[in-house]
Length: 70
Image (cartoon, rainbow, N blue to C red; front, side, top):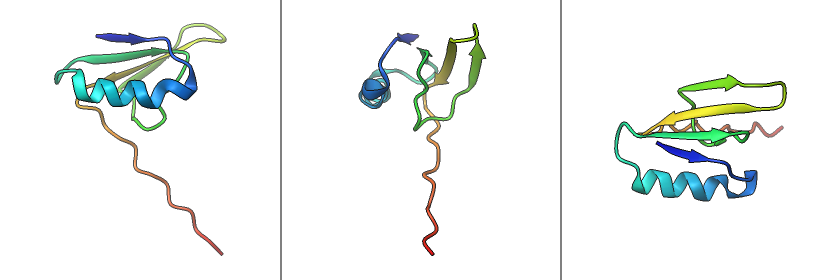
């Protein structure tokens, strides 16, 4: 298990490193900041101001949204 307490601007780098280095079945756990590009296995609201997100390797990526231009 890798436990993260990162800032939002460093999450993408932390996720990329975790994807390279964590073995299948390992967990990435993040306090306070969601990994926006990944689909969490679970999310817990631990207090009014704190959440914990859990991701398991191999990570499931969220599909990018496509904007409709008019």
